[in-house]
Amino acid sequence: MSAVEVSYTEDGPADAPVVLLSNSLGATRGMWDPQVPALAERYRVVTYDTRGHGESPAPAGPYTVDDLVDDVVALLDRLGARTAHVAGLSLGGMTAMRLAAREPSRVDRLVLLATSAKPDPQGFLDRAVQARSGGTAPLAPTIVSRWLTPAYAAGHPDLVARLEAMIAGADDEGYASCCEAVGHFDAREDLARISARTLVVSGAEDPALPPPHQQLIADGIPGATLVSISPGAHLPNLERPLEVTGALLAHLDAAGSHA
Image 1: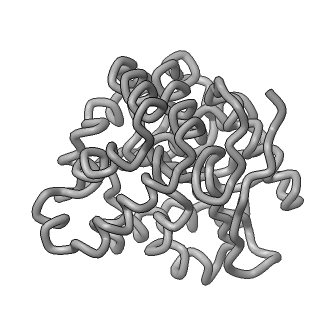
Image 2: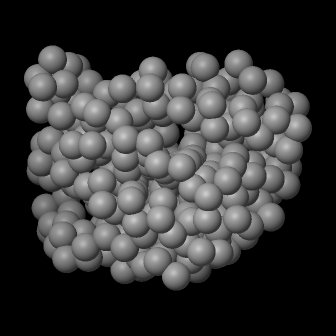
Image 3: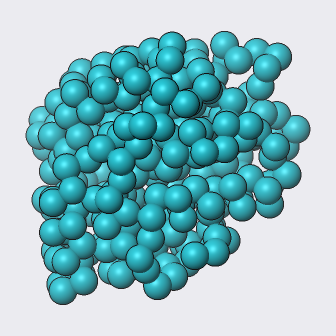
């Protein structure tokens, strides 16, 4: 499959090092809103919607994570960015992980949040079937219940409603094809080949991709650092924005003149 032109937003100085942020399965680039202002003070921050999500096209499937990587490479080329710092969460982390293994010259610093090198496939394959048969909207409450801890969700009903609307707004077929890409993903043999300096972020209370998934990644990538966020579920960047943004900045700023 050829790359698609994904929809993206830029913030920050045009001549600064690029930080590319990749969204989770079912979310849009708006999930990064808490991180963008601080990052944009010193980086050219690019957020985008993965194919099948938000304002990006939803070509006919099937998709693989390599297809999503092709989209990112094409986006970096459109931006004129030879290299970028890349951060991704969940599906976005899988895309970032595969990009770093497959195209090492394009990735400077890497941040992998609440993601997995080998998810349990059946749940994602089942979800693809459900999305095709009934659409994404009926799935939204259950999915969002994994994104935030119950206590945080109870205190932030407006955020819950916004996240459920993101999922309901995803293209049914595009979302299903992304679910299948996750279900078939296995990057365990890629990990040792990743040369980018890597930060792995784990939500301590993540029921979707629990901490052992991130521990495996951190153990497999040479020199990787693992940070656990608690309380935090599958989208710790929304629940604990100060901690996650601070961890991102500390990792990226350490690149210094190598950015």
